[in-house]
Length: 235
Image 1 (tube, one colour):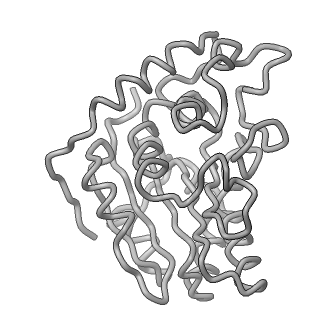
Image 2: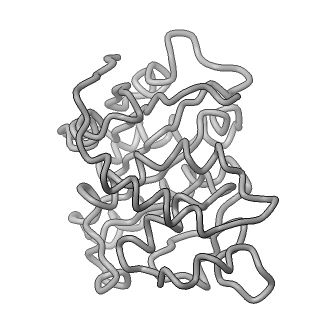
């Protein structure tokens, strides 16, 4: 396990993202849950994921699954910044007739792969997605799933981690946002849970864009890959 910290550029795009997030109001925003993911989501969509609004239905696209689906404001802001949804939709967040629910809905939003918000399901679904792509002979697309550290308290995730390692699902990638909210934790840190199951894993500063990108782009032949992004503890 390594912790990497470098000088992080790219704060200017975050100003726009925070402005987009400010357009979404209401009592159920789950603000800390959203802001904890903002940097990681931006690095993924800006520099890692091979998917655009025009390719959101293509077989060869990368798949991104947001398991940490409560507090999706940052996700919606990034989707708007990248042209998946119109900026004009953001002020309606959470309203009766808005497609932007308090949990994302894949049937209402282009580019959204799963409906999420019930924690603990995203990683098992990502394992299934990677298996499905392998069965179809699609070796190009990658599967990325973003989960919260507290989701690792769920037994479904431990089963998924164990299976993915033994099945050598090297197109599978997990990005764990670690804000110290897990109840149980793991001796040796979160990354050690993945490496013990045969994954490649690294831990980085979750606010450092260059460190995030380097970790996401690291080669991991024959193994699934996990990036643990440490952010400020949940208050």
